Image (cartoon, rainbow, N blue to C red; front, top):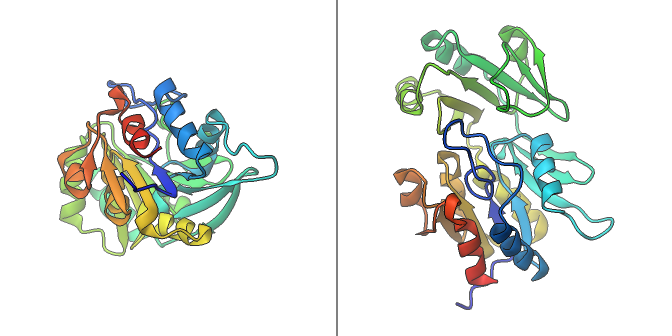
Amino acid sequence: MTYKPKLVALDIDGTILIPHPENGFSDDAVTPAVRRAIDLAYDAGAHIVLASGRAPLSMSEVLGHLDMPREHGSHVLGVASNGAVTFSYPPLKVVSEVTFDAREAVEAVLKHVPDAAVAVEEHGVGYRVNRHFPHGELDGEMILTPIEEMIASEVSRVIIRDPDSTSEDFVSLAEKLGLQGTNYFIGWTAWLDLAPEGISKASGLAEVADRLGIDRSDVLAIGDGRNDIEMLEWAGRGVAMGQSPQEVKDAADDVTASVYEDGAAHEISRWF
């Protein structure tokens, strides 16, 4: 029990925010128990770093709900877009971004799901989309754009969403296609994130930890999704939420209670 994390890396949806069981959309605010645990870690001097598949704009809203940062003139760092983007806040500023040519991967996927919705992040604004996503799935403005134009230049992330498929369908499709030159993450619904090869929340956290002068052994990471696997494996202590898929639990050092039982609060409170 002498372990004291210097950096607490937290996934957002399904970890500190509770998703609705029917549509997966998260509530806006953390529960009192999770907020108290985060406050304890923050007040003890630990760096709180959100690591999410969300865009920086959306993540800045969550930081606002957490009242971070709390010292005038200071800022916090975050890992967005599944590791492709790191940012500081406030003000919201992209610190680093990794991009890739997504054309081949997108075209391969759309051959199998031609009616899917596609989105590319537009930092600080929202997303360029080929069609409107269901209400609540994307934050910020949705700018209707032809797919060819969206992926004509390199991007940091592409979202492919097919309401008529399942997450298992997308897992099978991604494995079948191979998606060379990219990394990919499957959401709890038929939601496929394409990212630059070798990029994950782990690579983004490694950059943030290096900027803060913190060794990976001093990082506590908590998450629930397939896009958290690399982060949980990389951190000195990686903990999966109780409702996580089995492959996420297998990658973790430990498993806490589910998000519906304030699992993140239980884990953080062990050390602070």
